[in-house]
Length: 246
Image (cartoon, rainbow, N blue to C red; front, side, top):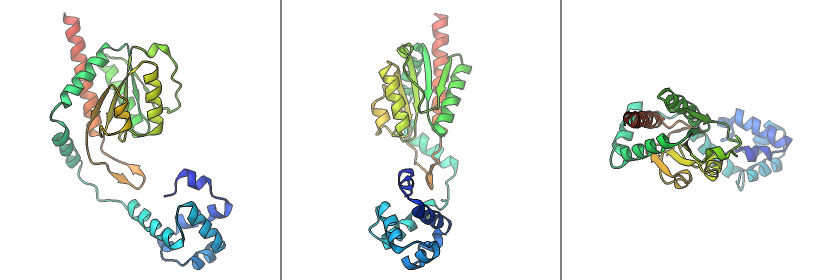
């Protein structure tokens, strides 16, 4: 509801109004506009202007949206981690899933360089993936900085493993396009194949679990991603051992 773009558009009076609303939101949803004006020492016209910046026609609509915003931010009763693990197994461990891991492992095995990419929690897993692959004999690096410069022709024989739950994060898509433009093969691990990142990838592995949010925070389980990374790393090692024995 209160995006960075909207907040940056507030003037000083609107910022003070915003701060009051955030501190007393449970009370504001029951106030009349005149009561809020008195409490915040601003005019009713300032409040109406504030509401319009939030795409609300008036104060009544703003209060409805604020109530919905508060309801969404209430802490949900989270299901057991076992539930999401079972969901992953039932939905994903069928069909061509193992074939995608095999295809990914073969591509990584033949690559001169392996680069993991992710931001936020996916960035943490990108770092884990790079370390895990390196521990098993395939040196890898990671990028968590969304503004990391990508302009090296040495990436032409590389494989980039890009992690994103939604597959729609602007920063991640930017890096994916830059890496693809430099000739790197793109492998994406996302929650669904129906996303932009999956469509621009050479290989996509989707794990299909229910997305979970607490307020604005996406806390969707990352157990499937860890499994995919570890299983792929093991497969890469077995492929390399087979090549050495030949």
